[in-house]
Amino acid sequence: MEKMQKVRIIRKNDADSLEYEVGDILDVEGTWYGGVNVKGRSGIPLSLDREEYEEYRQEPRNAAGQEDRTDMQVRKSGGIDPYSYQLGVMDCFCEMVASGLKTLAMSHPFSDRQERDRYLEDVKRLCEKYEILFYPEDEALLTALFPEEANRNRPLFLFYRKKETLEAYLSLKKERKALLERGEYTEKEKLRLAHAFGRLLSYPEDGIERLIQKARENEIRR
Image (cartoon, rainbow, N blue to C red; front, side, top):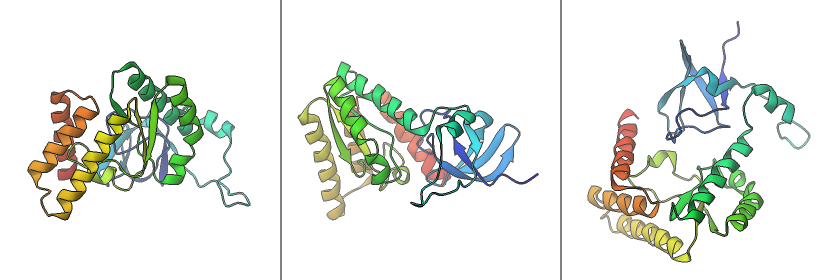
């Protein structure tokens, strides 16, 4: 039997992980009794359950050099297509912002600006539906709150109700940049900005601490 070389993620069992998303194509490092072992977005080893992936084979390309994939192939996989999944996640975040549950929300990070901008028209419609605002961000604020390597140079969308929220977010980014330029971005400052960012995302203090600890553990494993 030919060895599986790559897999495509069709379902995500670990909702909190930043290491993989539906639609990602990952190299297989090995197998275990319940699935396969791969490396996540930041290089951290991951063990995937069988229902989370399908074998990926390079699709024939059309005249434009693009993969020729059809809705039939998606249906055969038994999972929701990646575009609809990402849009559904953003719909949920928009509703949470509109209801006041979150002051600021972020989409999952995209691989590049081209991928993010594919969603632009649908994001506009979502924000009109929920009467909120959005901001196409090229890279999220990097702090101790999330693993930096999983978010560095990864574009995304921000969702919020008030312009003051975006101003507060951008102010934190400017503050981080100034600290770096002065050589004063110490561990203490990194944690302070992480807590400020977490509060802007409406996380409780104990939730912020858990995310910081999880980011540390991911960094150690790398």
